[in-house]
Image (cartoon, one colour):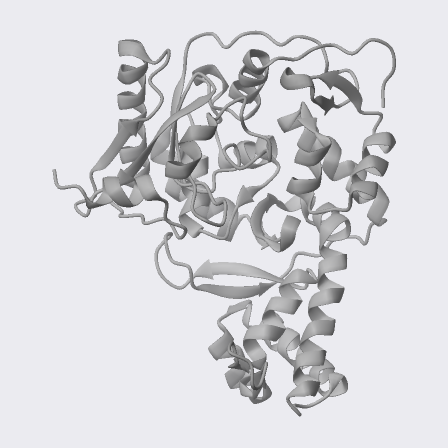
Length: 399
């Protein structure tokens, strides 16, 4: 993973890399959602609005956000929503689905299917052979329909309505429906993906669709490929960052680093980071200072486990929920300096929590990005799925 003296990449240079590679500086803004997704590798998809707002924050023309993202997701299918790292739903470039499936999905999928079969057996529900028949029938029905809800699929395959008791006798006992659990397993296995939402672009209820065909790849090779893509976007990153982002074992992270010939660099506070081969050279400064209003769960704010180089530790209590999910953030020149929210009337409001270096120039630039965000929202009202203290406070304020 490289040899000789290590180059030092400090926080200031890491922020420059972030500005350019995450398409946040003005000159680096993208023309289409596909460019954004390719640059970031993955967009968090568990909160539907995050995908659109993360794209919109990086497009040169915010008016294109909603129609172009819908086109990419549901017409051209150049972007796909599927399970990925850490058993989380993301939006990926379609040409990356095979890599994600082989590098992170297979292990989780085996565990999910085993868990479903075990839970059904404990409840006295039908066995794995029965489940395989239902799965085959469900996939055939979905192929005929193109896209369908679980309810529509159950009309074609009534056995999907079968229910069983989960964790009988426990405090968390509940009744599970085969359709809910099976479709989740099929999603993790890469056989189905989320289709169009039932409502608007902010809806969290989706139709299902058959997953795009992709080749079966070697797991180790796929892990190397995914790590190379991610380090190109987010390097330098520590081993802890890589393990956290991928959800892999540390042995898998180290194997992938060695496979791509990653170069070690020194970071602030004595940490060792890694970049792709040949990527340790200095990068040019952005042409001008930049500001951004990024949504909850944005891939930049959530990109690293170790965040002190762009986020002051004292801000975490206001900007993260108790599970570690980041809320809407305000950025100035590569640092998180505050947060934003929408009031009940849809007005975008923001607050600076760390004023160091912001000044009048920063406040003017942030206000301009608030206008950019209003254009992206186009009158829609968005409430993050995972709410944070500052977002709750700001959204509750009266004008």
